[in-house]
Image (tube, rainbow, N blue to C red):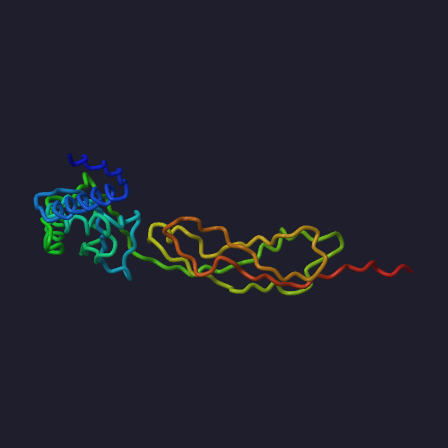
Length: 231
């Protein structure tokens, strides 16, 4: 009589390999199918004459787009959205632009993304704002009346400032309201030695303003008043 075969021990490594192979086969098979729909973030680049105009609101770097296609195409655009070329959105008349035209943007996406079907751009209202770009040269003036010198000490030379002027650039409505001169406070208490320091210019904090320099070097000599000779 033939003895029954011995039971083989369970081998978890082989079982996991089989499960992994089956899952991989299913995943690859699913990627080949069509009819998937997904929302993906896509980079956008606003095209306008930036030498004449400047945005007054932060422009979005990406927009959310609803697309359909096969699994491979959707996987590429959902996992690697910023490795593709951005879509160009032309703003021919920035001063009249207030919102993004999602219909024209959807059409532009359809021309740009050839392997996927673009259904629509997900944006209820994407606001824009522009103003004319303006620059102004501002003269720096030392606030000599409020220098904190020690008793019996005076400023004994011309107060030198480098640079003498700065250039502010930004939206016209902001730059036009800036004064042509800027008084620079000189920090320090009970100064007795010659002064030569960098002074920060913390006067322009608006995110849409650009300043040619954020520090100024101030230098001057300090002398002590001598008592008049006694007779």
